[in-house]
Amino acid sequence: MNKTLLSAALIAGFGIAAFAPQAANAATGTITFTGKVLSSTCSVATVTGGTVSAGNVAVTLPDVQASAFTGIGNAQGLTPFSLNLTGCPVTPAGVQVGATFSTNIDASTGAITNSGGTSNVEVQLATPAGAGFNLNAQPAFGPVTATISGGTATLAYGAQYYQPTATAVTAGTVSAVVSYTLTYN
Image 1 (cartoon, rainbow, N blue to C red):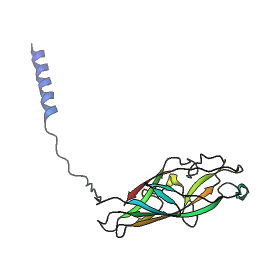
Image 2: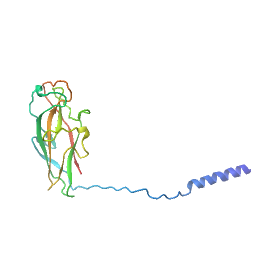
Image 3: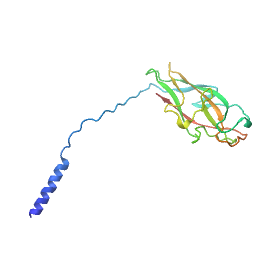
Image 4: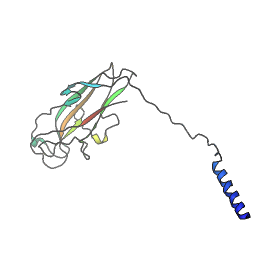
C-alpha cells in the first residue's frame, strides 16, 4: 500500500513540474522588417530595337554567317534594344526597376537555348556594348536596373548569337524565348 501511495505521489509531483512556468529568458536580439508598398507597376510601352504587344517583346537579330563563329564563347550579331517602361510607381521616390529572366536558360552557359534549326548557337542577353550576362547568376533585381523618374524608366540591353561549345555552328534558323518579370527595389 505504501508503494502505491509513494508511486502516486511521484507521478503527481512530476506532472506538476511539467506544467510549472519556465524561467524567462532575456532577448537575444531583434528582427527588423523593411519594404515598400508601390502605387502601381510598370508596363513595357515600347521597345527600341524591337516590337511589343501585350507585354511580349520581339527582337530580330541580324543574319550572320556560320563561318563567323570562331569557337566556344564567341558572340556575333549584337543587337541593342531597350524596354521603355511607363505607368511605373511615382511613390515612394527613388524606386529602381529591373527585369529578371527565367525559362529556357542553359544551365552551363546562362544563355537562352535555341529551338530553331541551327545547331550549337544560343542567344545571349548582354549590355548594349556586348558584355554578355550569365542569366543563371543574375542579381536579385536583374542584370540591368534603372531608377524610375516621372513614372517612366528605360532598361537597355543587347542580344547576340552565342557559341556555347567548340563544336562548329551550322546554318539554320534561331528561335529563343525567355520569360521576364519586372522587379522593384
